[in-house]
Length: 119
Image 1 (cartoon, rainbow, N blue to C red):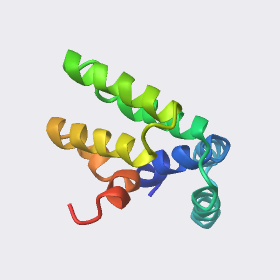
Image 2: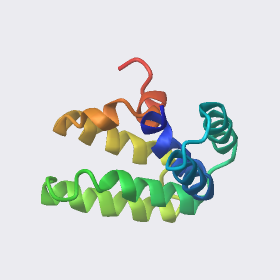
Image 3: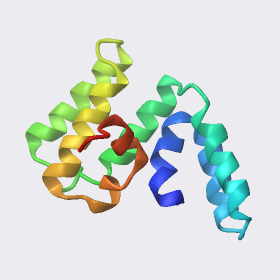
Image 4: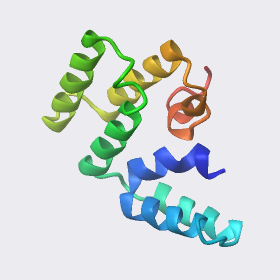
C-alpha cells in the first residue's frame, strides 16, 4: 500500500512522508498508516513539497533520459516556480516518461494514476 501512495504523500506533505516512513520501519498497525496517509492527502501541497516530489520522481529518469528530456525537466521546474505552469504539467511530463521508459513501479503510483485515471 505505501509504495503506491508514497509519492502522492510526498507531493502533499514531506513531514507526513517522513513520519510514515518511520512508522513503516517500526511495524505499526496498518490502520495508523492509512490514517496518516489520508491526513497527508487532505493537506494542500506547498510549492516546495511539489518541487521536492517532482525532483524525487525525476530521479528515476535522470540517468536514462535524453538531453532534451533533461532540459525539459529543468524548464518545467523553473516555469512552475515562476507560476507559468501548474502542477499538472509536471505530472504530465513524469507520466510521459513513466510510459516511455516503462517504469512499472511508478505506473502503480497513485500520483500518476489520479492524474491520468483512464490510462
